[in-house]
Length: 149
Length: 191
Image (cartoon, rainbow over all chains, first blue to last red; front, side, top):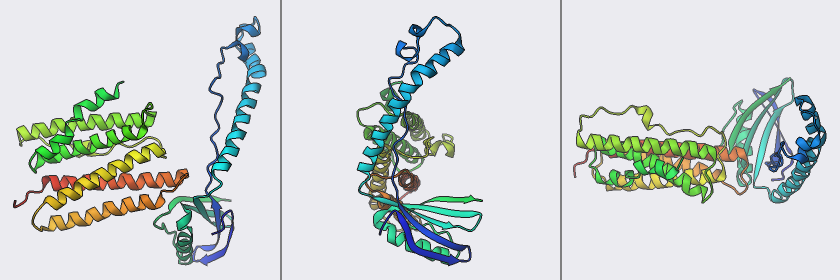
């Protein structure tokens, strides 16, 4: 099965017309801040940064001097993690199958399944939709529905 | 808090369940066995690191339940008219996070495997063909089905949805095996 593209398939049934979309089930890296962050340290706007004792001033100093390097450091870590994740995900092991009815309110249902079961699961989903049923095939996890106007 | 101190009071469960004759006391010991096994398998699967918060909370609860059921089994063995414990105390504790980590899944799978093996062996050792045993055999097939579902969902680099599905199937298998073990422990046989 080709993943990351719209399956060449539209199913029409009592619930309406659904387009079946198959995508790779990739996991993006989690956002995390630098573990060495120490707001009391001089490099992050601690006492060395001025005589002011006002909380507002301290906060301002921290925002100006601390958040920027922390943010850029965390961002660079995220970018590295992102590419590392892309590399480890290069071999897709599972897919998400989304059935979308584009007529407002847009209605979509999502299943996740190992790639090896994807063809069978897709067939069962299509057969179910044709009969007006949301099926829960064995070997797939149904993540529920979503409606948007 | 030291996890070894928590696990110690229920560690007797492993021997107790085999030593007691079939009946209410053995059924109580079986509950202790289930909880103690689950706790130990979760710890084993976590490796030599610190336990994650959510694992620790569940393991601590499991060991406390195991200790409770060991006491209950001993009390019932000494005096069969001891008041039975509430069914709530036999319920598996839940994780308070929705998705299981790969290590937690290993621990849960090992628990399900161990309980399934115990129940299947116990079933074989029973003689006679009563309606209740026929039903038990069917229920054992239900445990296998849940474990098969978990196996079907298991792939390398599992996304969170699949890990959630695997965890749910394995926990169902554990619950069914626990219920089966209860029936078997309380079954009186001709032999």
